[in-house]
Length: 254
Image (cartoon, rainbow, N blue to C red; front, top):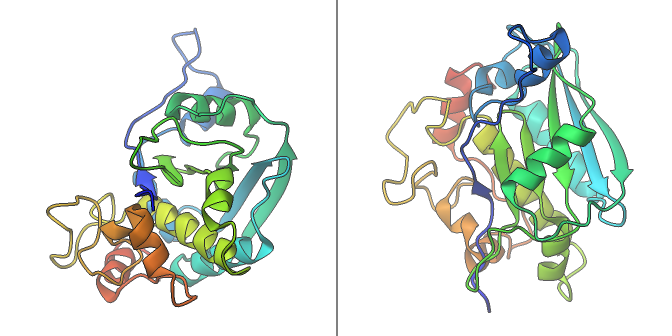
């Protein structure tokens, strides 16, 4: 079976500026959602600045994530973040951009063209895009299933997930979807050692920004096809281990 690189994380800053020396209010607002992965971990975890969280979930027509996976994602957020005014999802479809395979820059441009929700006075916004094609970072020995690429943005390569789970048990797709989504969002929440400081020594020295506990959602083997499928072989979604949870709690989370 082809070795599959899953749940990759890309650390880069994509900022958009106006042509004027002083940015407009609109551009200033958007720039707050165009920073590096992990920068907004505390804002997402705590209610110090933002008391609610909205997910702008956009998918290419025909590649909508399962309702089970979306519900699992919301449950994950409610379990780990302090948002007394709630976590909500606004979902809609768009036509195919027709750019597969997608580069990271193309994925960011799709967000810039289609994103409508940004942080406001008391609500922090997240962009989640479910693509109809594959990642341009795929190689002959591995394919990418998801990427966290900004402080409040991630992409899931839904077509690749569906191809990978085709012919398996009917519940495998939502389990793998849930695993990819929550792993990527774990990086956005600052795991591991990516904005949520380590409370104990559990970052894998050989696989930075991942947990060294082999059963943890943030373990590096979630980035290989065999590892990811092995982690869900029992029919359950991998969970964060106690050390990762402690990191989130120390940064304002539950």
